[in-house]
Image (cartoon, rainbow, N blue to C red; front, side, top):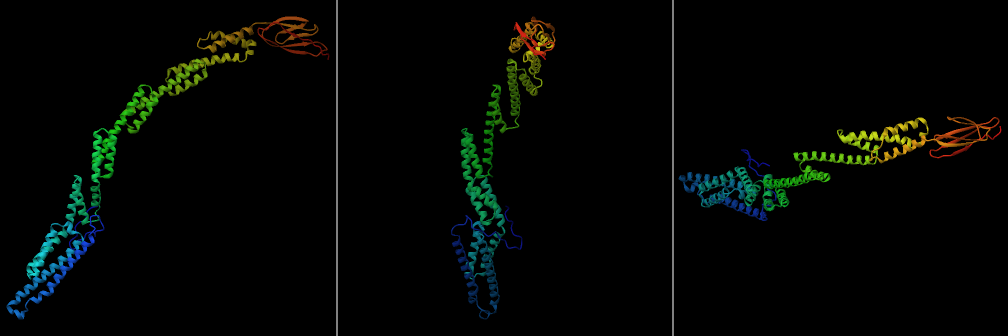
Length: 482
């Protein structure tokens, strides 16, 4: 806070009454007692002079007319001396309470000496000289009272200048002097606190400098930080702390970037990601970090694409065409220009469709026992040709369907027996008439054979003709009379 300015003209100059402070000694009460004893003694002396002196002065009747002028002159000088003495005593008492004896040198001592000379002149009844000395003493104290502000500002400036150059004893002395003049002065209080802790800050600064010189930046940083905490307004520790912290950060950043770039070069994506995260925490907008992040993103995408390419290749090897298509779709979502995914997708779809056509017949071979499906299967086989060696499942499907088609195309010998009275017919084949034994060839499939005879209930039987099974026999006759 700013120091208090001197009082306006006409006002009685005042300083803030001092409170209990560390700058006052433990004998403060004794000092005040001695002060009042001295004041009382001086007052007694003054009163003695005032009341005893007339007894020594001759009355006009005794001295005669020629002495009247001298008497009047002496009385006036005596009164002037007494008035000056009283004024000096009052001002001295007030300034003493404001500790002017501690901050008002040399004027304070000069005023004391002049007052002592005035007291001697009074004792010698030299009133004019006494008045002159007391006036001189009084003017000294008036000057001192009027110049309190200048003394305070000068002492505060001297204290701050001494603190700035680490002259700590001088700084402490000057700050204490300001506080004697103005105990509530916040600048002085704060400055005194800084001066009292500055030595510890300097010790930590020295320790930090030694550690920094030895390359132990962490220890130097800790020492500088401690010095800065002791005196936050002292700039050198803060500057040193910031310098070392920046050096540590730079070293840590460079180490993280080196590890990140090395890992990227070696294809260690996870290691590169962790190291780059450390570097990004320190300097998120550094160009090297941004460039490395782009490389990492690209590397991760390439790694993902390579992983998907491997998954797709594995599914192709296993002829899992549906799974391969799903993988290729993921690849194209990431990179729609991935050529391997586009070509792989087309092939996988074609192979999935082809395998589905074979599965249509292989899952239900009975479909081949009809003329049209059999023809379609033969057309499928002729169009598929031979499967590549890397598709063993398709090779097996082709072979199996070929066997099924061959079996479905080869007639099987069937033997029918009857009673010679029943008319026999086969649906979708024709009428056979009545017979007791008949041999014919039928293509594999399921046939419905019907027997009819007048006066008898009709008979219907199913006959399954299986490829490769020969000499299949069936007996059919109408035996239940209606």
